[in-house]
Length: 64
Image 1 (cartoon, rainbow, N blue to C red):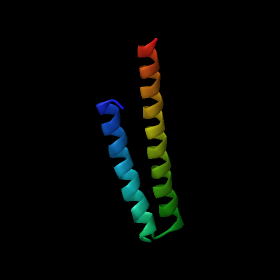
Image 2 (image 1 turned 90 degrees about the vertical axis):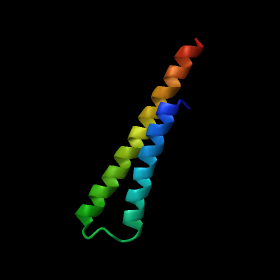
Image 3 (image 1 turned 180 degrees about the horizontal axis):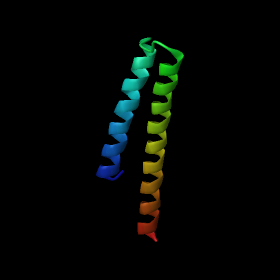
């Protein structure tokens, strides 16, 4: 994985881990807060997927 892509994915994953730990520790006070944090996690995971897909496309294009 390209260093820039790897860095971005790692940083996003760290945020996912922090938010997941927040939920796992029972820190959400309301259902709304839980939904909000879960939405952030989903968005970050989606961002990682987009970055990885883009990297694969670039690698494929370079190989052609």
